[in-house]
Image (cartoon, rainbow, N blue to C red; front, top):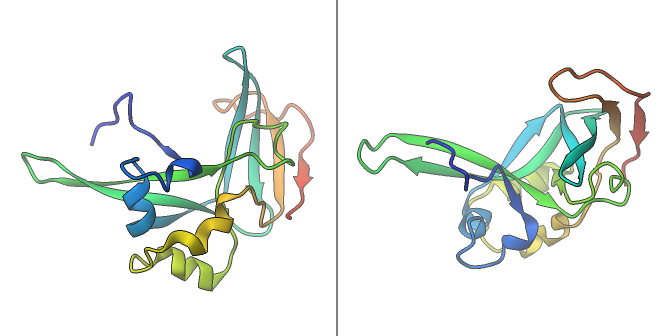
Length: 162
C-alpha cells in the first residue's frame, strides 16, 4: 500500500452514512479503536499555521474511534492493513485550538467498546451519539512552537471532561 494524494488518514463523521463513500462499509463492518497517549492540532489562517497544541489524556490513554481496512495487491496478493481516525465537529472547548474538527474520542466503557469492535453489529444507530463532539476525559493541552521541535510556548492547561 502506497499512500496517494487521495489517501485519507481521517474519515469525516458526516460521510459515514452516505452509501458509496469511503467509510460507509467500514463503519458497519470494520470499526477499530486507536489507543494514543495524545494528539496534536494545528490551526491555520490564510493557509499558514497559526499555532499548534499537543493534547494528552490526563488519567489514561485516549481511545480514538476509527475504521480499518485490508488492502490486497491485485498481482501479488500481498495484504496491508490501514486505519483512519473518525473526525467529528469541533467541541466548543476546543474551537480555539482547532476550528474544523476533532477526533472521535471514545469513552472508556467496556460494553460500548465491545459493541464498537463487534463486526456483527452492523446497525450503527447505537453509535449515533458518538458522532457528536464529546470530551470523555480530562485533557492536558500544551501550546507548542511546532511538531518537529515540540517546545512549549506557554503553560499547559486542562480541558475538563464533559
